Length: 217
Image (cartoon, rainbow, N blue to C red):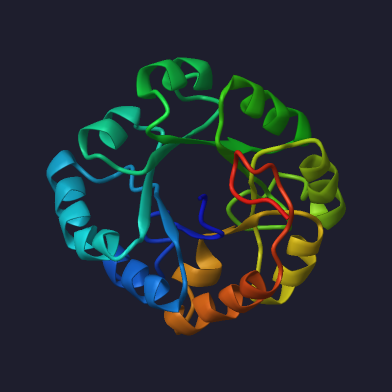
């Protein structure tokens, strides 16, 4: 099952200057179910060390997905890879990975999300839902745009971009499967508490999506 609360790493911007593994550990204590690693500046050895430090969390159920690097996902037996418009095509990744690996996709419109589903994605992140400093020129989709995108999809949609705990209930009522966040968790003064604030509405509201993807109602 695709987890419903994701922490997306993004170097120093996504951690408030703290070690990324400390943020991940605190988030996991608060209910984060999956981490998308976007640590593009790490060399191979540093990436291996990070995974080794996260292994105890993986043993307790935390799922680890890497951005863009299918080779890393396969070599380190991670849970999945999330692709983008400028990375390996989804259809090719599906042929190489088979069905034992989650394939995610970073979508920025309903049409892009539909194309990703048709190409074999298991889930999509859809962003930005709200205004965010990381995408200053992007037009936010808003909850209404998110709802329109969700209605056309049979795979889980994770809302990303400017999302705070206070907005989570509205996002879930739009039909989104879950939340993915960078700074609302990573830059929080108390990461564990922030994760709990996200997790509470997720425990209360479960949207209906295709049973082949995650859950049925």
